[in-house]
Figure 1 (spheres, rainbow, N blue to C red):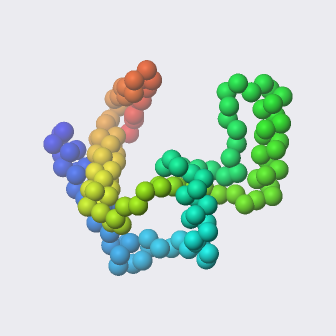
Figure 2: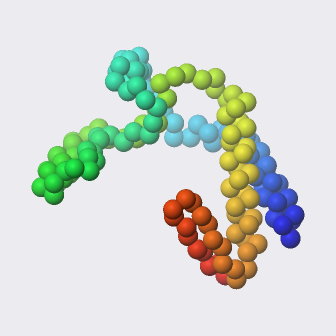
Length: 147
């Protein structure tokens, strides 16, 4: 049984990786909805001058300081809501350093992620009326799966 789950997960991961390549390259779905910034140079200069650390950014930013009083938190949230309404607003995935596009490292990481996701899905689909304990450090969860 375990061998079938592993083989199924590996094949499913490989199939989704191949589908991703076909959908991006042959069908052009990888470019749907993506836009370029018309005046990119000053925007990039502003990003490079102000953001030094790679990360996932949401703007306008919300002060999440843990030491805020209830009143301060309410004032911060009110000010943030006003900035959000006024705009602009968005999400930025930022990497300050360059990297080769479609590097072998990126492709192998994508393949590994597809295989891991498919293995998890194959395992969950194969479980029948079993209790599964998932341990993540201090947080242990128990799932009861039924078909």
